[in-house]
Length: 212
Image (cartoon, rainbow, N blue to C red; front, side, top):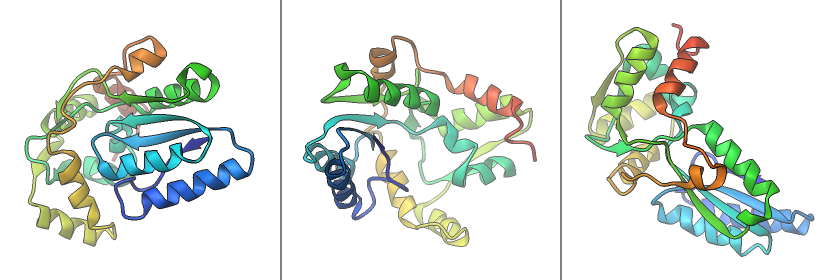
């Protein structure tokens, strides 16, 4: 069984809920659990330990930010509007493709070699949000800018859109440089390089996801 938690394992109560769910799954006969976790988050690591204690065979997949964050969810509208505003200053992130994550999860669910393993999944390069905006601009053929804002200004934006203000603290936490390094989990599990953000952006643009 593949276990994910929305909106993020860093949110209060997530570890306890993952633990309760995992124990219930095992009680219902589930024998293998694969958890989608985060990189560099202490709260996420607590959720990992809860899942491991369930008694099931387990694999943990710690993923960087998804490419697909920019064509769905709360980043889609900013991209369509031509301006991505975040309280992240000059942070860099090794964005990873959700397709690569899915392939790793399938392998973990179907191959016993991955039992008891923790994999960190990243893309092939570090990108700043300025870099992301430039790649999106190139793919879409229109100007998309990254604008750094203060934490308080971003909280106001979140309130305006009815989203949890805790997102502002989460972004500040996980984009403080702790995850500014590449990992080889995709290559280790799948035997190939991870997908690059530029390839994702071109394909998503061709599919029309950012057509205004």
